[in-house]
Image (tube, rainbow, N blue to C red; front, side, top):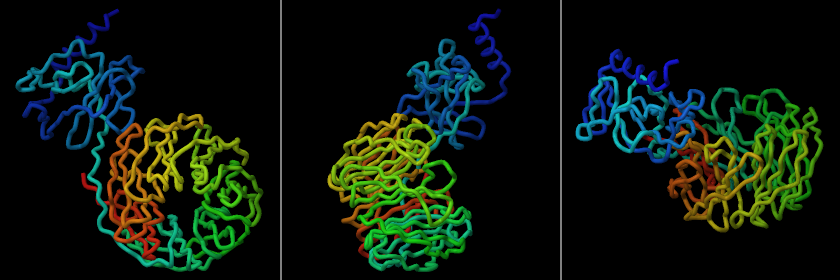
Length: 486
Protein backbone atom coordinates (compact mmCIF):
# COMPACT_ATOMS: atom_id res chain seq x y z
CA UNK A 1 0.00 0.00 0.00
CA UNK A 2 1.32 3.44 -0.90
CA UNK A 3 1.68 5.66 2.21
CA UNK A 4 -0.79 8.53 2.24
CA UNK A 5 2.01 11.09 2.60
CA UNK A 6 3.79 9.69 -0.45
CA UNK A 7 0.53 9.77 -2.42
CA UNK A 8 -0.03 13.41 -1.54
CA UNK A 9 3.51 14.33 -2.61
CA UNK A 10 3.07 12.37 -5.83
CA UNK A 11 -0.15 14.19 -6.61
CA UNK A 12 1.47 17.52 -5.85
CA UNK A 13 4.31 16.69 -8.25
CA UNK A 14 1.75 15.79 -10.92
CA UNK A 15 -0.05 19.07 -10.40
CA UNK A 16 3.13 21.14 -10.59
CA UNK A 17 4.25 19.40 -13.76
CA UNK A 18 1.07 18.93 -15.70
CA UNK A 19 -1.41 21.68 -14.75
CA UNK A 20 -1.48 24.07 -17.72
CA UNK A 21 -2.65 27.27 -16.04
CA UNK A 22 -0.61 30.45 -16.15
CA UNK A 23 -0.64 32.46 -12.96
CA UNK A 24 1.38 35.52 -12.12
CA UNK A 25 1.48 37.73 -9.06
CA UNK A 26 0.83 41.44 -9.70
CA UNK A 27 0.76 42.93 -6.20
CA UNK A 28 1.37 41.82 -2.67
CA UNK A 29 -2.17 40.51 -2.22
CA UNK A 30 -3.51 40.21 -5.76
CA UNK A 31 -2.83 37.48 -8.32
CA UNK A 32 -3.49 37.72 -12.05
CA UNK A 33 -5.09 34.53 -13.38
CA UNK A 34 -5.54 35.04 -17.09
CA UNK A 35 -7.89 37.99 -17.42
CA UNK A 36 -9.02 37.73 -13.80
CA UNK A 37 -7.58 39.54 -10.82
CA UNK A 38 -7.61 37.48 -7.62
CA UNK A 39 -7.51 39.31 -4.31
CA UNK A 40 -6.92 37.88 -0.85
CA UNK A 41 -7.69 39.28 2.57
CA UNK A 42 -7.95 38.31 6.19
CA UNK A 43 -11.26 36.73 7.25
CA UNK A 44 -13.54 38.64 9.58
CA UNK A 45 -14.17 35.51 11.62
CA UNK A 46 -12.84 31.97 11.99
CA UNK A 47 -13.73 29.72 9.08
CA UNK A 48 -12.90 26.12 8.34
CA UNK A 49 -11.71 23.98 5.48
CA UNK A 50 -12.63 20.60 6.87
CA UNK A 51 -14.63 17.96 5.03
CA UNK A 52 -15.23 14.86 7.19
CA UNK A 53 -16.35 12.77 4.23
CA UNK A 54 -12.90 12.95 2.63
CA UNK A 55 -10.67 12.96 5.70
CA UNK A 56 -9.75 16.66 5.38
CA UNK A 57 -8.19 16.24 1.95
CA UNK A 58 -10.67 18.34 -0.04
CA UNK A 59 -12.42 21.49 1.03
CA UNK A 60 -16.14 22.00 0.85
CA UNK A 61 -18.34 25.01 1.54
CA UNK A 62 -21.44 24.59 3.65
CA UNK A 63 -23.22 27.86 2.92
CA UNK A 64 -22.91 31.15 1.07
CA UNK A 65 -21.21 33.12 3.82
CA UNK A 66 -17.61 32.22 2.87
CA UNK A 67 -17.46 29.48 5.50
CA UNK A 68 -16.66 25.77 5.16
CA UNK A 69 -17.53 22.74 7.23
CA UNK A 70 -16.70 22.99 10.96
CA UNK A 71 -13.19 22.22 12.18
CA UNK A 72 -10.59 23.86 14.43
CA UNK A 73 -8.62 25.21 11.45
CA UNK A 74 -8.91 28.55 9.71
CA UNK A 75 -9.81 29.24 6.13
CA UNK A 76 -8.74 32.26 4.13
CA UNK A 77 -10.94 34.55 2.06
CA UNK A 78 -10.55 34.67 -1.71
CA UNK A 79 -12.31 37.37 -3.73
CA UNK A 80 -12.60 37.37 -7.51
CA UNK A 81 -14.68 39.33 -10.04
CA UNK A 82 -17.25 36.52 -10.08
CA UNK A 83 -17.52 36.57 -6.27
CA UNK A 84 -16.10 33.19 -5.33
CA UNK A 85 -14.15 31.85 -2.38
CA UNK A 86 -11.36 29.29 -2.07
CA UNK A 87 -11.23 27.01 0.96
CA UNK A 88 -7.83 25.51 1.78
CA UNK A 89 -7.65 21.80 2.74
CA UNK A 90 -5.90 21.44 6.08
CA UNK A 91 -4.16 18.16 5.16
CA UNK A 92 -1.93 20.00 2.68
CA UNK A 93 -0.36 22.22 5.32
CA UNK A 94 2.74 20.11 5.93
CA UNK A 95 3.89 20.07 2.28
CA UNK A 96 3.06 23.57 1.05
CA UNK A 97 5.82 26.03 0.30
CA UNK A 98 5.83 29.57 1.65
CA UNK A 99 5.42 32.48 -0.73
CA UNK A 100 8.14 35.01 -1.27
CA UNK A 101 7.29 37.51 1.46
CA UNK A 102 8.50 40.44 -0.63
CA UNK A 103 6.83 39.72 -3.95
CA UNK A 104 4.12 37.35 -2.70
CA UNK A 105 4.98 35.10 -5.63
CA UNK A 106 4.90 31.32 -5.84
CA UNK A 107 7.57 29.37 -7.68
CA UNK A 108 4.95 27.37 -9.54
CA UNK A 109 2.52 28.66 -12.12
CA UNK A 110 -0.06 26.24 -10.75
CA UNK A 111 -0.20 27.69 -7.25
CA UNK A 112 -1.74 30.79 -5.76
CA UNK A 113 -0.26 32.81 -2.96
CA UNK A 114 -2.72 32.96 -0.06
CA UNK A 115 -2.79 34.82 3.24
CA UNK A 116 -3.95 33.56 6.64
CA UNK A 117 -4.63 30.02 5.48
CA UNK A 118 -5.47 27.03 7.63
CA UNK A 119 -1.76 26.28 7.67
CA UNK A 120 -0.16 29.48 8.83
CA UNK A 121 -0.80 33.19 9.33
CA UNK A 122 2.04 33.65 6.84
CA UNK A 123 1.57 33.67 3.10
CA UNK A 124 1.84 30.21 1.52
CA UNK A 125 1.38 28.68 -1.92
CA UNK A 126 -1.60 26.44 -2.61
CA UNK A 127 -2.05 24.26 -5.74
CA UNK A 128 -5.12 25.42 -7.61
CA UNK A 129 -6.18 21.87 -8.45
CA UNK A 130 -6.66 21.12 -4.75
CA UNK A 131 -9.08 23.97 -4.11
CA UNK A 132 -12.84 24.05 -4.25
CA UNK A 133 -14.80 27.10 -5.33
CA UNK A 134 -17.79 28.34 -3.36
CA UNK A 135 -19.85 31.54 -3.61
CA UNK A 136 -18.64 34.67 -1.91
CA UNK A 137 -21.42 37.11 -1.12
CA UNK A 138 -20.40 40.76 -0.98
CA UNK A 139 -22.99 42.85 0.90
CA UNK A 140 -24.18 46.00 -0.82
CA UNK A 141 -24.33 49.49 0.64
CA UNK A 142 -27.87 49.82 1.93
CA UNK A 143 -30.02 52.69 0.72
CA UNK A 144 -33.68 53.18 -0.11
CA UNK A 145 -34.44 55.57 -2.97
CA UNK A 146 -36.76 56.66 -4.38
CA UNK A 147 -39.75 56.80 -2.03
CA UNK A 148 -43.25 56.78 -3.53
CA UNK A 149 -46.22 57.92 -1.45
CA UNK A 150 -49.85 56.91 -1.97
CA UNK A 151 -53.03 58.09 -0.29
CA UNK A 152 -54.60 55.79 2.27
CA UNK A 153 -57.76 56.07 4.35
CA UNK A 154 -57.87 57.64 7.79
CA UNK A 155 -55.47 56.05 10.29
CA UNK A 156 -53.92 53.30 8.14
CA UNK A 157 -52.80 50.47 10.38
CA UNK A 158 -51.33 47.26 8.97
CA UNK A 159 -50.62 45.84 5.54
CA UNK A 160 -50.54 42.40 3.95
CA UNK A 161 -49.09 41.36 0.62
CA UNK A 162 -50.10 38.81 -1.98
CA UNK A 163 -51.18 38.32 -5.57
CA UNK A 164 -54.82 39.24 -5.11
CA UNK A 165 -55.71 39.70 -8.80
CA UNK A 166 -53.87 36.72 -10.35
CA UNK A 167 -51.33 38.70 -12.38
CA UNK A 168 -48.22 37.28 -10.64
CA UNK A 169 -47.40 40.65 -9.03
CA UNK A 170 -47.21 41.38 -5.30
CA UNK A 171 -50.19 43.56 -4.35
CA UNK A 172 -51.07 45.25 -1.05
CA UNK A 173 -54.11 45.46 1.21
CA UNK A 174 -54.17 48.09 3.98
CA UNK A 175 -56.56 48.43 6.92
CA UNK A 176 -57.90 51.95 7.54
CA UNK A 177 -59.04 52.00 11.14
CA UNK A 178 -60.98 55.26 11.31
CA UNK A 179 -62.62 54.82 7.90
CA UNK A 180 -63.87 51.28 8.57
CA UNK A 181 -62.37 50.15 5.27
CA UNK A 182 -59.60 48.16 3.67
CA UNK A 183 -57.89 49.34 0.49
CA UNK A 184 -56.38 47.21 -2.28
CA UNK A 185 -53.33 48.56 -4.13
CA UNK A 186 -52.61 46.77 -7.41
CA UNK A 187 -48.94 46.37 -8.30
CA UNK A 188 -48.30 47.58 -11.85
CA UNK A 189 -45.29 45.29 -12.16
CA UNK A 190 -42.62 47.92 -11.64
CA UNK A 191 -43.25 48.68 -7.98
CA UNK A 192 -45.74 51.46 -8.62
CA UNK A 193 -49.26 50.89 -7.36
CA UNK A 194 -52.79 51.78 -8.40
CA UNK A 195 -55.63 51.97 -5.91
CA UNK A 196 -57.91 49.25 -7.26
CA UNK A 197 -60.74 49.46 -4.77
CA UNK A 198 -61.81 50.37 -1.23
CA UNK A 199 -63.95 47.83 0.63
CA UNK A 200 -66.15 48.55 3.70
CA UNK A 201 -65.50 46.54 6.86
CA UNK A 202 -66.80 46.32 10.40
CA UNK A 203 -65.90 48.99 12.97
CA UNK A 204 -62.20 49.90 13.36
CA UNK A 205 -60.38 47.22 11.34
CA UNK A 206 -56.80 46.82 12.50
CA UNK A 207 -54.92 43.54 12.09
CA UNK A 208 -55.11 41.55 8.88
CA UNK A 209 -53.80 38.22 7.59
CA UNK A 210 -53.92 36.21 4.36
CA UNK A 211 -55.03 32.61 3.79
CA UNK A 212 -57.01 30.38 1.47
CA UNK A 213 -60.04 29.51 3.58
CA UNK A 214 -62.21 27.86 0.92
CA UNK A 215 -59.48 25.95 -0.93
CA UNK A 216 -60.05 27.62 -4.30
CA UNK A 217 -56.39 28.67 -4.72
CA UNK A 218 -57.33 32.32 -4.31
CA UNK A 219 -56.18 34.52 -1.46
CA UNK A 220 -58.71 35.43 1.23
CA UNK A 221 -58.48 37.87 4.15
CA UNK A 222 -59.09 37.66 7.89
CA UNK A 223 -59.48 40.96 9.79
CA UNK A 224 -59.79 41.88 13.46
CA UNK A 225 -62.24 44.71 14.16
CA UNK A 226 -61.60 46.60 17.39
CA UNK A 227 -64.85 48.56 17.35
CA UNK A 228 -67.09 45.56 18.00
CA UNK A 229 -64.50 42.92 19.02
CA UNK A 230 -65.18 40.81 15.95
CA UNK A 231 -63.37 38.87 13.24
CA UNK A 232 -64.34 39.20 9.57
CA UNK A 233 -63.61 36.65 6.85
CA UNK A 234 -63.51 37.97 3.28
CA UNK A 235 -63.23 35.59 0.33
CA UNK A 236 -61.15 36.65 -2.65
CA UNK A 237 -62.38 35.94 -6.15
CA UNK A 238 -58.98 36.22 -7.82
CA UNK A 239 -59.47 39.55 -9.60
CA UNK A 240 -59.02 41.91 -6.66
CA UNK A 241 -62.59 41.71 -5.41
CA UNK A 242 -63.49 40.38 -1.97
CA UNK A 243 -66.83 39.23 -0.59
CA UNK A 244 -67.64 39.28 3.11
CA UNK A 245 -68.47 35.72 4.09
CA UNK A 246 -68.97 36.00 7.81
CA UNK A 247 -68.26 38.10 10.88
CA UNK A 248 -68.28 36.57 14.33
CA UNK A 249 -68.13 38.52 17.56
CA UNK A 250 -65.56 37.31 20.07
CA UNK A 251 -66.76 39.55 22.88
CA UNK A 252 -63.33 40.67 24.11
CA UNK A 253 -60.78 43.18 22.87
CA UNK A 254 -58.74 41.65 20.05
CA UNK A 255 -55.22 42.27 18.83
CA UNK A 256 -53.18 40.26 16.33
CA UNK A 257 -54.18 37.42 14.00
CA UNK A 258 -52.21 34.72 12.14
CA UNK A 259 -53.02 31.91 9.71
CA UNK A 260 -51.55 28.38 9.67
CA UNK A 261 -52.48 24.71 9.35
CA UNK A 262 -52.36 23.68 13.01
CA UNK A 263 -53.86 20.19 12.62
CA UNK A 264 -52.26 19.11 9.34
CA UNK A 265 -55.50 18.69 7.42
CA UNK A 266 -54.52 21.01 4.58
CA UNK A 267 -56.97 23.72 5.67
CA UNK A 268 -56.15 27.26 6.78
CA UNK A 269 -56.74 27.69 10.51
CA UNK A 270 -56.73 30.96 12.46
CA UNK A 271 -54.99 32.04 15.67
CA UNK A 272 -56.38 35.24 17.20
CA UNK A 273 -54.89 37.15 20.11
CA UNK A 274 -57.80 37.85 22.47
CA UNK A 275 -56.28 40.61 24.53
CA UNK A 276 -59.35 41.23 26.66
CA UNK A 277 -59.22 37.86 28.44
CA UNK A 278 -55.50 37.00 28.12
CA UNK A 279 -55.86 34.12 25.68
CA UNK A 280 -55.20 33.00 22.14
CA UNK A 281 -58.18 31.58 20.28
CA UNK A 282 -57.23 28.87 17.79
CA UNK A 283 -60.02 28.34 15.26
CA UNK A 284 -59.66 25.07 13.35
CA UNK A 285 -61.30 24.97 9.93
CA UNK A 286 -63.80 22.15 9.42
CA UNK A 287 -63.75 22.09 5.64
CA UNK A 288 -66.54 24.60 5.21
CA UNK A 289 -66.03 28.33 5.15
CA UNK A 290 -68.47 29.19 7.91
CA UNK A 291 -67.69 26.67 10.63
CA UNK A 292 -64.75 25.91 12.91
CA UNK A 293 -63.82 24.42 16.26
CA UNK A 294 -62.11 26.47 18.95
CA UNK A 295 -59.07 25.89 21.18
CA UNK A 296 -58.23 28.39 23.95
CA UNK A 297 -54.60 28.98 25.01
CA UNK A 298 -54.08 31.01 28.21
CA UNK A 299 -51.27 33.57 27.94
CA UNK A 300 -49.59 36.01 30.31
CA UNK A 301 -51.08 39.45 30.94
CA UNK A 302 -52.31 41.46 27.93
CA UNK A 303 -51.12 39.45 24.91
CA UNK A 304 -50.45 41.58 21.87
CA UNK A 305 -48.48 40.28 18.85
CA UNK A 306 -48.27 36.75 17.49
CA UNK A 307 -45.76 34.76 15.45
CA UNK A 308 -45.80 31.28 13.94
CA UNK A 309 -42.94 28.91 13.16
CA UNK A 310 -41.49 25.50 14.00
CA UNK A 311 -39.46 26.09 17.17
CA UNK A 312 -38.54 22.47 18.00
CA UNK A 313 -37.86 21.00 14.55
CA UNK A 314 -40.76 18.55 14.53
CA UNK A 315 -42.34 20.01 11.37
CA UNK A 316 -45.35 21.25 13.35
CA UNK A 317 -46.45 24.87 13.68
CA UNK A 318 -45.76 26.48 17.06
CA UNK A 319 -46.95 29.83 18.42
CA UNK A 320 -45.21 32.72 20.16
CA UNK A 321 -47.05 35.74 21.57
CA UNK A 322 -45.82 38.92 23.23
CA UNK A 323 -47.44 39.98 26.51
CA UNK A 324 -47.31 43.74 27.09
CA UNK A 325 -48.83 43.51 30.57
CA UNK A 326 -46.10 41.23 31.95
CA UNK A 327 -43.12 42.09 29.68
CA UNK A 328 -42.84 38.48 28.56
CA UNK A 329 -43.35 36.21 25.60
CA UNK A 330 -45.25 32.91 25.71
CA UNK A 331 -44.26 29.86 23.66
CA UNK A 332 -46.79 27.16 22.72
CA UNK A 333 -45.52 24.03 20.97
CA UNK A 334 -47.91 22.51 18.45
CA UNK A 335 -48.93 18.86 18.75
CA UNK A 336 -50.09 18.52 15.15
CA UNK A 337 -53.75 17.97 16.01
CA UNK A 338 -54.72 21.56 16.81
CA UNK A 339 -53.66 21.25 20.43
CA UNK A 340 -50.64 22.91 22.03
CA UNK A 341 -48.45 22.38 25.08
CA UNK A 342 -48.79 24.61 28.11
CA UNK A 343 -46.99 27.88 27.64
CA UNK A 344 -43.34 28.54 28.37
CA UNK A 345 -42.75 32.08 29.58
CA UNK A 346 -39.63 34.15 28.85
CA UNK A 347 -38.91 37.67 30.09
CA UNK A 348 -38.01 40.32 27.52
CA UNK A 349 -37.98 44.14 27.53
CA UNK A 350 -40.64 46.61 28.62
CA UNK A 351 -43.93 46.54 26.65
CA UNK A 352 -43.11 44.00 23.89
CA UNK A 353 -45.35 45.07 21.01
CA UNK A 354 -44.17 43.07 18.01
CA UNK A 355 -42.10 40.05 17.08
CA UNK A 356 -40.17 38.68 14.09
CA UNK A 357 -39.35 35.01 13.63
CA UNK A 358 -36.29 33.93 11.60
CA UNK A 359 -32.91 32.19 11.78
CA UNK A 360 -30.68 35.09 12.80
CA UNK A 361 -27.72 32.94 13.89
CA UNK A 362 -27.53 30.80 10.74
CA UNK A 363 -27.66 27.52 12.64
CA UNK A 364 -30.87 26.24 11.02
CA UNK A 365 -32.85 26.94 14.20
CA UNK A 366 -35.60 29.50 14.61
CA UNK A 367 -34.73 32.62 16.59
CA UNK A 368 -36.82 35.57 17.77
CA UNK A 369 -36.56 39.36 17.62
CA UNK A 370 -38.91 41.16 20.04
CA UNK A 371 -39.60 44.90 19.84
CA UNK A 372 -39.91 46.50 23.28
CA UNK A 373 -41.80 49.79 22.97
CA UNK A 374 -41.33 50.85 26.58
CA UNK A 375 -37.57 50.30 26.77
CA UNK A 376 -36.88 51.28 23.13
CA UNK A 377 -34.98 48.07 22.49
CA UNK A 378 -35.06 44.86 20.48
CA UNK A 379 -34.45 41.57 22.30
CA UNK A 380 -32.69 38.92 20.20
CA UNK A 381 -33.36 35.38 21.45
CA UNK A 382 -31.54 32.36 20.07
CA UNK A 383 -33.49 29.12 19.69
CA UNK A 384 -31.90 25.78 20.56
CA UNK A 385 -34.12 23.71 18.27
CA UNK A 386 -36.11 22.17 21.13
CA UNK A 387 -38.44 25.10 21.81
CA UNK A 388 -36.19 26.86 24.32
CA UNK A 389 -34.80 30.35 23.78
CA UNK A 390 -31.90 32.29 25.28
CA UNK A 391 -31.44 36.06 25.19
CA UNK A 392 -28.18 36.73 23.33
CA UNK A 393 -28.23 40.48 22.72
CA UNK A 394 -30.30 43.64 23.08
CA UNK A 395 -30.36 46.32 20.38
CA UNK A 396 -30.89 49.93 21.41
CA UNK A 397 -33.09 52.29 19.40
CA UNK A 398 -33.29 56.06 19.17
CA UNK A 399 -37.07 56.32 18.95
CA UNK A 400 -40.27 54.52 19.96
CA UNK A 401 -40.35 51.25 17.96
CA UNK A 402 -43.52 49.50 16.89
CA UNK A 403 -43.65 47.06 13.94
CA UNK A 404 -40.80 44.78 12.89
CA UNK A 405 -39.97 42.68 9.84
CA UNK A 406 -37.12 40.25 9.20
CA UNK A 407 -35.63 40.03 5.71
CA UNK A 408 -32.31 40.11 3.86
CA UNK A 409 -32.03 43.80 3.03
CA UNK A 410 -28.38 44.00 1.92
CA UNK A 411 -28.21 40.81 -0.16
CA UNK A 412 -25.66 38.95 1.98
CA UNK A 413 -27.84 35.91 2.76
CA UNK A 414 -28.30 36.99 6.38
CA UNK A 415 -31.64 38.03 7.82
CA UNK A 416 -31.73 41.70 8.81
CA UNK A 417 -34.30 43.71 10.78
CA UNK A 418 -36.36 46.80 9.98
CA UNK A 419 -38.53 48.57 12.56
CA UNK A 420 -41.00 51.47 12.39
CA UNK A 421 -40.77 54.31 14.91
CA UNK A 422 -44.07 55.89 15.87
CA UNK A 423 -42.79 59.29 17.04
CA UNK A 424 -40.62 60.02 14.02
CA UNK A 425 -40.49 60.12 10.23
CA UNK A 426 -38.08 57.23 9.79
CA UNK A 427 -37.59 53.52 10.23
CA UNK A 428 -34.59 51.80 11.80
CA UNK A 429 -32.56 49.06 10.12
CA UNK A 430 -30.19 46.63 11.83
CA UNK A 431 -27.97 44.59 9.51
CA UNK A 432 -27.14 41.04 10.52
CA UNK A 433 -23.38 40.61 10.99
CA UNK A 434 -23.61 36.87 11.62
CA UNK A 435 -23.98 34.64 14.69
CA UNK A 436 -26.81 36.78 16.06
CA UNK A 437 -24.91 40.07 16.16
CA UNK A 438 -26.23 43.16 14.42
CA UNK A 439 -24.95 46.50 13.22
CA UNK A 440 -25.70 49.77 14.92
CA UNK A 441 -29.03 51.38 14.10
CA UNK A 442 -29.30 52.79 10.56
CA UNK A 443 -31.88 55.51 9.99
CA UNK A 444 -34.02 55.34 6.83
CA UNK A 445 -36.36 58.26 6.10
CA UNK A 446 -39.99 57.54 5.21
CA UNK A 447 -40.84 61.14 4.23
CA UNK A 448 -43.95 60.85 6.42
CA UNK A 449 -44.63 61.08 10.14
CA UNK A 450 -45.70 58.24 12.46
CA UNK A 451 -44.70 55.14 10.45
CA UNK A 452 -46.74 52.27 11.85
CA UNK A 453 -47.16 49.04 9.88
CA UNK A 454 -44.35 47.51 7.81
CA UNK A 455 -43.96 44.75 5.23
CA UNK A 456 -41.13 43.68 2.92
CA UNK A 457 -40.92 42.14 -0.54
CA UNK A 458 -39.41 42.71 -3.97
CA UNK A 459 -42.18 44.91 -5.34
CA UNK A 460 -40.38 46.09 -8.50
CA UNK A 461 -38.85 42.73 -9.49
CA UNK A 462 -35.21 43.85 -9.40
CA UNK A 463 -33.99 41.18 -6.98
CA UNK A 464 -33.81 43.52 -3.97
CA UNK A 465 -36.12 43.57 -0.96
CA UNK A 466 -38.22 46.74 -0.79
CA UNK A 467 -40.32 48.09 2.09
CA UNK A 468 -43.86 49.42 2.44
CA UNK A 469 -44.76 51.54 5.46
CA UNK A 470 -48.18 52.74 6.61
CA UNK A 471 -48.07 56.31 7.92
CA UNK A 472 -50.74 56.66 10.58
CA UNK A 473 -50.87 60.45 10.97
CA UNK A 474 -50.33 61.44 7.32
CA UNK A 475 -52.91 58.89 6.09
CA UNK A 476 -50.51 57.57 3.44
CA UNK A 477 -48.37 54.58 2.59
CA UNK A 478 -44.72 54.89 1.57
CA UNK A 479 -43.02 52.50 -0.84
CA UNK A 480 -39.25 52.49 -0.19
CA UNK A 481 -37.31 51.03 -3.10
CA UNK A 482 -34.12 49.23 -2.18
CA UNK A 483 -31.30 50.63 -4.31
CA UNK A 484 -28.55 48.74 -2.49
CA UNK A 485 -25.28 49.11 -4.42
CA UNK A 486 -22.47 46.54 -4.35
